[in-house]
Image (tube, rainbow, N blue to C red; front, side, top):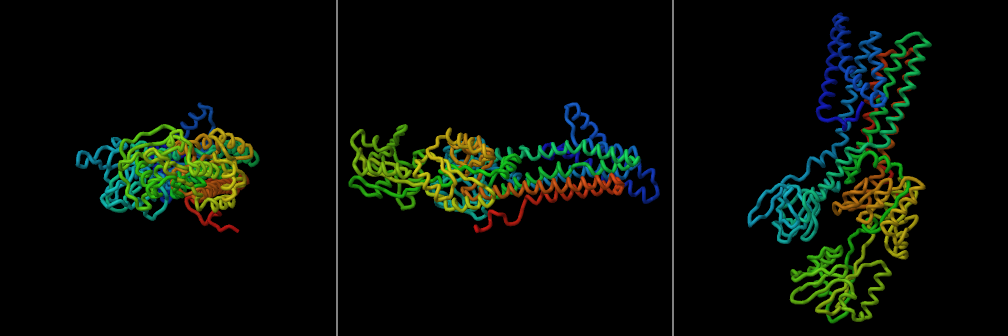
Length: 633
């Protein structure tokens, strides 16, 4: 029995047709039997068996030619035996069990993948672009960075962009980000803020300046992740297949002994009927796909069953500091003036120039100016100095931002500037020095704060079974250890390069499965080296998201707790379904071998087991209160 996701649409159509034909054959045979036409009934049930038996025979022969032996051999023997022994109704029920089992599997997996399918179906399709003072509707693929777009009410944002000043409804947009974050409450975005593709305009129309093409947008990256999630197969599923293959010779031995000891071949047939290991084949994939779908509903994309199964087994957690335990968005906390100029003037000139800067701190400086209500003129004659800073003209004054030595032009730094540079380096803070008309006038100090939920998240993860938590960072050791104590890590690896992070992952893997969490490009090698890489992907498509096995779409670390809880529940349900289903099958084999379970009753019993394990596996779609939700003791 193959997994439904491996079936093309025409294959699924044949499965539906076979299921309908087996039902029809059973009904016709039952009607004929009630009318006393036993010969017609046997012919109808025999035809029902043939509808499933012949394709199965070709499939088994093809597998044998490839050197593969599948558990479908048991079903093949059972149906062939029912024809040979005249147990036509039992054989027809087996045929219904196989075709109906595949139908149940298709239905269950389809329901389980509902959230992933919803992400694929709601991909942006409409775009409005300003062209020569009129609106055009180009193909989505034609949108380029720098294009000015209009997003109408109810439309999906087509590409990543910045909300424009002077939008149709002012400088504020109301957005439904539930598809990306799992949060149902609309959020407001203001002029200059980044808006991600895939969110829905829940307010009035607004203008957007594209910063990516459609192929490079957040939603396009998410769709690639979803497709990976749909095509991956879990190690647990493969393990289930191996267990099923071990089960085959055991079944044949028990059936042979039942026949030899009783002299009745019907007993052997009864053993074969109840031995078809559908619970083992069906339960694991349905449970894992259900878990993947539930995670998607919470704003977490898991790239397939392999990732969710490994996440469930992990006991060691490694986390990058910046952007993971901290917000990853430094904020201006101090403004220092070294010359006869106000702190407000320093910020206004710095923010005005940073409006056109691609530097990682530029957006934070501009945001600080907006928060203080400063009006920012647009700079001119802007030049980027690689590795040094940026310079340009703002309101008639020459403004330079960057390193203190470059701005000072080789002259000695003012004592206040030198002291500030030393202090920020020691405390792990960021600084941006500001020059006005060739004079080092001041500096901005920026700090990346810990997330509010960091400490609570790590406590919740320990309750879920994580035994060791290590923080990796490029910061100096005193700063790193201070952060580690604040959030409650077991160890801190400071001054780590990307290669150092990879080495730390490999070292920890000697003790057990490792989960690595990060958000930056420099984290990508470590994410790839871990058993499970988790990327904080809220800021768009990055190398870390591509290297990761799990991507958290919302900028919230506590979603990591959800991912662990969902993975552990899915694996527990898969194990429960497999063990319970196989246990019932083994018990039924013993009863059948003893002569107390005839083939027809055994077939009906096995069908009930199949339905039960699939319904149980679907419990991974939801669930009660998890350990992660419970308060700390």
